[in-house]
Structure formats: C-alpha cells, structure tokens
Length: 543
Image 1 (tube, rainbow, N blue to C red):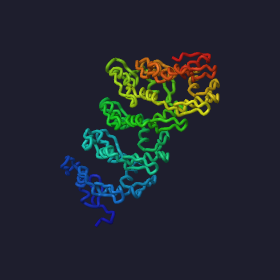
Image 2: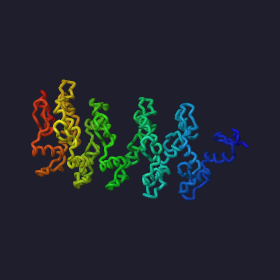
Image 3: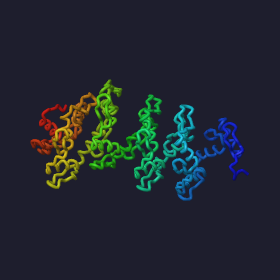
Image 4: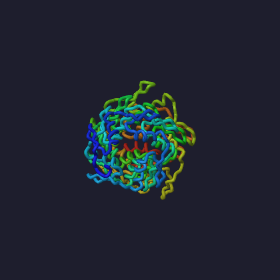
C-alpha cells in the first residue's frame, strides 16, 4: 500500500507528472489527448473524467445533499461543504513562505505563489491573454463565446456561468448572506464584503509600484495600472471602441442595446445600473454623502468628491495646449474640444452637432417635445431632471433656519450664514492680490475675475464663454423657450426659479442683498454681482 508513503510510481510519459495510483494516471492522460469520453445526457457537454461529469450533473439538479451543521447552508458537493466549514473556524492552514499570508485551501496558496513569480501558465488560445489560475482562464473564455446556457427561471435572463446566474438569483430573492459585523451592512457576494471592510480600517494594502498610490482592493490596483500603460484590452465588437476594464465595456454595450434592466418599484421607470441608484434617491430625498467641512449633503459620492475641490481649490488637470487648469478630468476633456472645434455628437433629426452627449440628449427633446420628468406633487412635466429639481424647490416653503438676532427665517443654512454677516460686518474672504476683503466666498471669486481675463464657462451650443456659471445658465435659456416657473400673484412666467424669486421681490419690495462698498441694495445676488464691477477700475463685460 502506498497510502502512507510519498512514493509515486506511476509517471506520465508526456509531462513527467507522477501519481500514487494507476487510476489517477488514466484520467490525467486524457488532458493531453483532449479526449472527453464522458458526455452529459441533458446538455451534451463533454468531460475528460467521470467525477467531473458527476459534479456537472448537480448543476442541472436542485438537490443539495451536503448540509452545514452550524448554519444549515446546503451544498451540492462534499468538497464545497468542507471549504465552507473553514469560514466558521477562520482556519487558514496553508501559509505563504514569502509573505506569511494564510489560505484555507492548498489550491489558493498555489495560485497565490504565482503572484510573487509573475508566472501566468494558463494562456487563452484565442487572444493569447495569460492568467494565474485555470478558473480565471475558463471565465475569460466565456467572453469569446456567445453561448449563455444558464437561464434564470424567474425572468429568463441568460448567463454564461453558473456563478453569474447564482448572483443574479439573489436580485430576485433580495438575499444578502454576507453581513458586516461592524455596521451590519449586508452584501450579495463575499468579495464585496471584503472590500467594504477596508472602509472601516482605512487599510490600503495594494500599492502601485510605479507611483506608490495605495488601494483597498487588488482589482482597483489592476485598473489603476492601466492608467500607466494606457492599455485598453477590452474592445467593443459593434463600434471597436476600447476600454481599460471589462466593467466599462459592459456599461458601454448598453448604449448599443438601449437595455435598461433596473426597474424602479415605486414608479416603474427603467434605468441602467449606473443611474438606478441615483433615481431611487429622488423618491427618498435621501442625501447620505456629507461634506465634513461645510456639512452640505449630496445624493452621490461623486458629487461630494467634486464639491470637495471647492474647499481645496485643487486643479490637477492641465491643458497641454494653453496651460489652463481644471478641477475635473471631464471638464478638461470638454475644454480640449474648444481647441479642436470637434462636435462628435450629431442630431439624427437635423444637422446640428454637439460636443457632449447630454447636450444632444437635451436637444433631441426639442424634436420629440417629450417631458419625461414629472413632479409628484402637482404633476407638472419637465424635459430635464435638473428642471424638475428646481421646480421641486417651489413646493418647499419651509424656512427652518432662523436668525437669532432679528428672527428672519431662511430655506437654507448657507443663506442664514450669509445673512449673519450683515450683523457682524465680518469679511473673512480676502483677495491675495489686492487684499480686498469680502463677506462671501462667491463674491471673492467674482472679484478675482477682475484680475484675469479667464472665461471658463463655455456654452455647449454656440461656444460663447462666460466668467460666471450663473451667466452661462442665464445664457442657456436663450436656446430654449420653456418657462416652467409661474408667479402665483400676477401669472408671469420665468425660465428659472431664481428669476421667479427675484420677481416675487417686486411684489414684496424686499431688497436683501447690499453692497459692502456703498450700501446700495439689490433684489438678487446676480444684480449685486454686476454692481460690484462698477467699483473696480478695469470694468469688464460679464458676457
């Protein structure tokens, strides 16, 4: 008996791999001949070994005979149950000799060793891409195949792998078995939970060898490395556009299929996965992302990150042609088009072209007259979501922020803060060029434009440029005739909510904005902004 010895007398003549038993050598030889004599009677899939066929047959059966005694979770194979039991003990008996990282399975340790050697022995025969593990190669091969054999019985959606189907089924059952022990947040996949845990520890163990930037997840590091190599290995088969990672390609493909798989349970509207989460927040009015500096709240993490740049004044994206710097990469990309005069987005109904896709989308509404954004309070319809958001503010008459000095009430905390400065006469914002002090940061920003000829706000329709975003917004209304804001006193209509508010002051005779130079008062901050330029020597044309 060879069971208790390390002797392996049965050697493969092709690759010299040795085995203890003849019965183990026979199925191994089939890996060289590519012979697959064991065929599934249900789907005709072929296998080299009988035990592989038996494992495969369980994918067609709902039977899960192997049950965990601790949590009652059931499995189709005994090997899967054994692997699962290690999650209860936290035992990791297989330790890497190089970095001391522990693993539950010997196979995981072997795969991990390859990350130190950079060896990738599993090569795709279609595109020559190499992988550390055979399972990764198998997953990759599905990207070359159009076949989707795993079908959801609930909605008939098809998937290339059983894993893909399994994760999808959780979207129907709302099952989230992986729970964070710190904050009780639940997840559908264990790897997502692992990534989430880093948000509590702030640990970033994966470091880029080129620029030393650290990341919480290895997948994020891999995506980041593509920014150094400029490699875009994922190609769209429809339009040949290339992408840095597979998720970007998947998201792009939706633009061709027009597929909107995520349906809102409240209003039955359909969305792509990227817009769905943002849409849900329009029903809950929830703004979970809070600025730690000024307490302003946002519905999206990306909006918060963009907002943070206001506090840091950081502009890391520099135009190589004119040296202009921008806070956001998207703004730089759009700015580049002002040099090339390129307008890649063409209207299919008329010859008009645009620099940005969203501008084309807005323009298309002028042909369809469609107004898909509806106010839930008064059923008024709008062409764009930002118009609806502005309209919703007309319903919010709550003035919860009250001045302790004069009892004046305001809708927003920032309005109260600005008002408080009229009592203290405080001017905390100082111009570094001429030492002029201002009560508000926005007024300082307007003042700084008197020292420069910069006009960073560009109209996407006619390329006209402006120094202030508020001027650009006003100008954009010249491209549309819509005036959704109605004065309830005299029925006059306005294109902007701000214009309606200014108009209402003509009925109340209120002038809340005062000039700190000459104490002249104005109904709107826009009028005050224009007036401020009369006090500087070099008067500039805002438009």
